[in-house]
Image 1 (cartoon, rainbow, N blue to C red):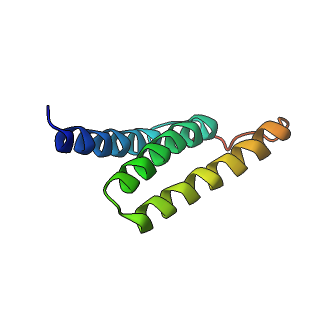
Image 2: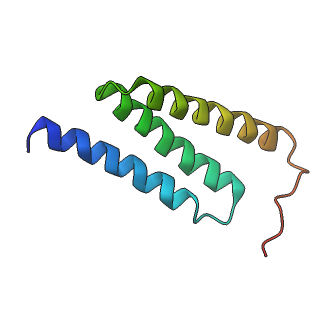
Length: 83
């Protein structure tokens, strides 16, 4: 397997994680899986020198971490009910 294929597989894996995160019924799980995908996508973007994509994904990780912190800090806040 050559380097180019490995780099592309990293990008596909990150995309897969982000897609799967939207299937989560729990907001906490969604934010955790989405953060992992966004972080891997940021690494992928840095490898291919796509700096705007890297910055955007790092911002998404920060946003997810902020809201996860708020959820963990105040456990009395319940997640929205399922439809």
